[in-house]
Each structure stands twice: as structure tokens, then as C-alpha cells.
Length: 160
Length: 107
Image 1 (cartoon, rainbow over the protein chains, first blue to last red):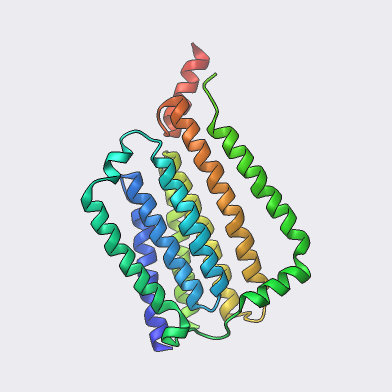
Image 2 (cartoon, chains in turn orange, red):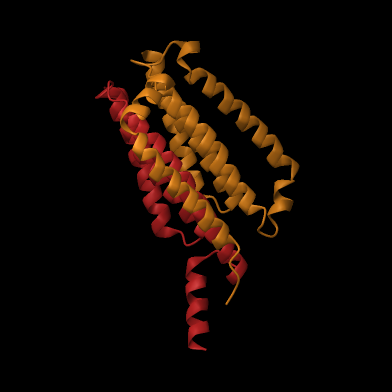
């Protein structure tokens, strides 16, 4: 439990710093990078709290999907590509990746034994989802589909 | 229970940063990042209260999964708007876009 609150405190400080830097950074690339760090750390907190499936979902969909989509969008903006290819950014990115991977490993209860309380498995979530929320999946899927079509339409808009 | 207060405090700070970013920034990408901060603050609260106060209620995790899925769709639309603004007006700044539209409508 001691290690648990220590880990939560460290991750909390990392989250607060990332949030401040994500909002305050002058460079959009840096802001997106700090948003990615924040999303991964929040996923680690979910894993630490026993919500492992939600944590993995957060890291895959949010930190992996949305952040990379933002970075990809930035590539369409002029002058961004040159900044991406500067070598010093690569070094910082590798260091940040190693730190995040280590803290992610520390958050997993099977390794440190600090997961507090009950762990809810993906099977439990699946059975609950199938039993009570099956009808809710279709509107969510429809919203995502409409969002996909709308975003491709908006992105191809021309002046006038 | 101290851990719950810690997590709620952290999520409150993220929420405040999100509100501050939405209120003070005019860049479309910065506003989208601030909106993501707001969503994540709410999700962190949901999971923390579920874990410490209602550990048997799995519904909170299902709600979190739904919210993450919808937030991903919202981010895709926001990024498409950002690209469209940049292509049509040359800048993703909402104030500049508003002024340009006023000039176009006036002229």
C-alpha cells in the first residue's frame, strides 16, 4: 500500500506537469507530445487501480490512436516536417519512451504487487456488456461511423 | 481513502487546466487538446470513485470504454476541422478566422 501511494503520487505529479506543458507549450508538436505522455500515464493509473482493460484501451485508442492522428495531421501543416526530423527531438523521445515504459511496468500489479483491491478482468466486462449493454453498442458504433464520414467530408472542404 | 483524495485532486487540476486552455487559447489544436484534458479528468474521476467506493460496479468501466470510443470520434472530427481551417483560411486561429469571415462578408 505504501508503494501504491508513492506510485500514485509520482504519476500524479507527472500528469500535472504534462497537463501544464500540453496547454502552455508554444510549439504544437510539443503540446501533442505532452498530451500523449499524459494519456499514457492516466492509462497507467487505470491499470494500477485494477481497471486493466480500460487502461489498455486508453493506451491503445487514446495515446496510440488519437495522439498519432494529431501528429499525422500536423504533418500536413507546412514547416512541421523539418522540426520532426531534428535529431535532438529523437533523443528526447527515446528517453521519454523508456521512462514511460518503466513506469508502465511498475504500474502492473502482477509485477509489483501494489494493485489495490479487486482486479476486474476483460471477461467480466464482456459478460456485463453482452448482458446489459448490447443495445448500447449500436448507437456508439453509429456515432463513430458518422464521425468518420463527417471528418472525411470536412477535411476535403474547399473555399467557397 | 487518501489515494482517492489524491486522484480526485489530480483530476481536478487536469480539469482546471482544460478549462483554462479552452478559455485562453484560440488555436484550434490547443482547444482540442484542452477538450481532451477535460474528458480525461472526468474519466479519471469515474474510475477512481468506482475503485474506491463501488468496486463491484463494473458499469463504470463500461461507461469509461464508451466515453473513450466517442472521444476518439470527436478527436477525428476536431482534427478534420483543424485541417479544413488551415486549408481554407491559412491559419488555425479561430479569432483570425472570425475576422477574415467578417471582412469577406463585409466586402
